[in-house]
Length: 349
Image 1 (cartoon, helix red, strand yellow):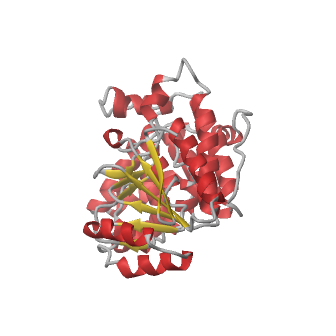
Image 2 (spheres, rainbow, N blue to C red):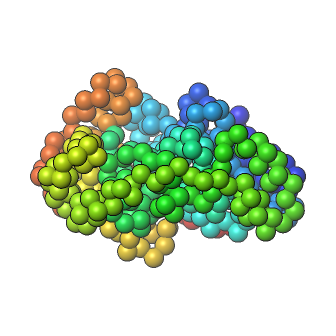
């Protein structure tokens, strides 16, 4: 195990805590391996009836993968993140297929890889403090860890969230079916104690139902007509044009976010969303994401996006190509074919 992932037993509850609060619990390869080992142990233990995951600190569950490390290892260990993603994506699929209830507290910030180790779970708990986002297009990447699967199957709102990287709160997560229960943050300690006293899996759902409170209003409902009009097309340029012509603060902000993202990432993500909607299994989409992610390691925009966002922090990425018109369909086809690296191997249980 690792100090960055705490694992223990509390009653008949298997406890897992992401423990890098200073880094918003950003995931490392060691944490992923430790999490997988914890699932092995808890799944095999007949005394454990459910698994409960949360994050240390008061700012968020998990801000995603450690992208600074990706940037720093771009020359010295280019295969590190291929290994990282193989393990991570397999873990995402495993969480989705666990036979025992996987309960996750999505309190505070939940982004990127943090979505992958939470939103695929059976019982997803949010609070009024929850802020969820898949902002990968803003750094030249793609909404991975099954993000395309989660958002691509939630209509126009999901397409908007995947392309723009905009954040949403508990109300929208509940409305979109990306969360199951909303609780008051002041009751979390009591809720955790009650869960640890559960004796059957049926007790878990009853305890969560008794603890839930009303979620904040869902804000995207007000934009449903606009989102449907803008994102019914698979052509990103048309989506931007619709937003530009619509006017209003929301449309202007959405348009600005799309125009600031990597053009390659936008077109790649839009294709992945279409593939996810047609896919029969989460695993199929994770393979698509893995192949595309490995392809991006050999390109320009991913490193440039990380540089602009967290290395130099100038917020001025210089994308290549710089426009959507410069990204040909055959480029996206090539990215989706991957680099020939071994696909993730998926486990269940």
